[in-house]
Image (cartoon, rainbow, N blue to C red):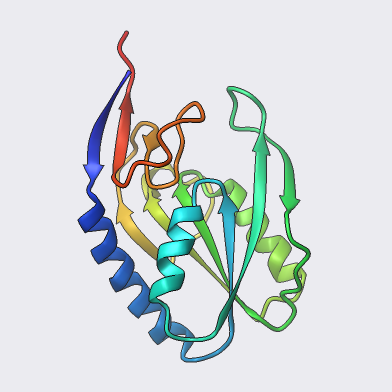
Length: 171
């Protein structure tokens, strides 16, 4: 296995700044709830939060998956939070099919969110199986392999890397 760099830390920082500006324009000083889907979007949340100018709070959820599968086993709302009449920005590392994000968006809307937007580190629209749009993304990519770095782990490792790498497995 080797890692091939796809996006450098400087590119990431520039995109964070641009996305934060777009979010600030979109939200216009309304209180915002940033909901991070752990673990992959933790660094994204931290960097984005430092760039936003308007008022916001941070919440977290964790999606547990079956080993070596993409099936969702359980969604844990790690903090008890209320989204009723609040503007929600759901943060995700990579949006592929959109299935998990659509499910979570429906849950949050059902809980009374005033609005819901989705932000991703990497959006892969060609992999989408739902109509879930990504409102803000750092990068858009065609279908691709697994990513590691900038909070995203491969086999529990490499999340600490400041760049985003594609995982290349030797066969």
